[in-house]
Image (cartoon, rainbow over all chains, first blue to last red; front, side, top):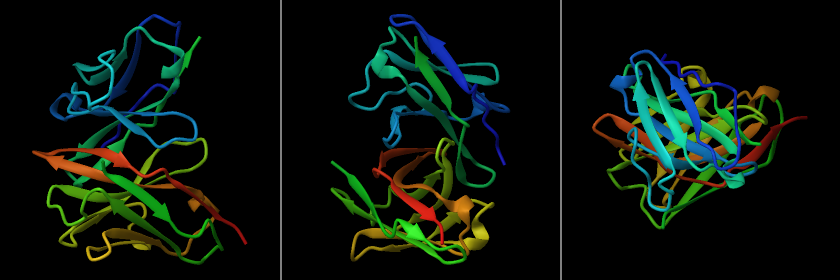
Length: 108
Length: 122
């Protein structure tokens, strides 16, 4: 089945920009979706269809691609952005969703 | 606003069957635009998709769990359910239900339940 690879952790200073990557074979041919999960809470969709934001998600959250890597970019990072972030795609071969392993974002 | 709420036993004995129900409010499981999913997360670990069901009854399962999982939908009660048989300690996790949208080959989860912890222990 399709595999998505994320770094286990990313650290960033407040006010700076964080980039969380998600790698997969030919990932540019798939739509990538991103979820934020804070401790004790359910995941929250923050970016869908590569770069769209659900209602209520700040413009500071954006998605992009480069080669075989998708990236969730969080600008002007605040303490409240500290969370685990997961990427997700649709495995068209098996007709089911696949998650990356998750990245813990630490705000220094 | 769509809301999903998981319910079921928080403690299951090894070798028995884990049964959970997700009740949907503010929307209908009979809507043809959505897939209804179960996802789990062991403590300190990542998200694992378990299964989905369409209102018509069409299903798909994670190959790693397929032999033990059954998902069903009851449109009259506006809920869907999960059965996981022959459980072991490895099945201890927070179980989430979630609504999935599939549009032109793009699938994502737009609403989630709060999650329910299920512990497998004698």
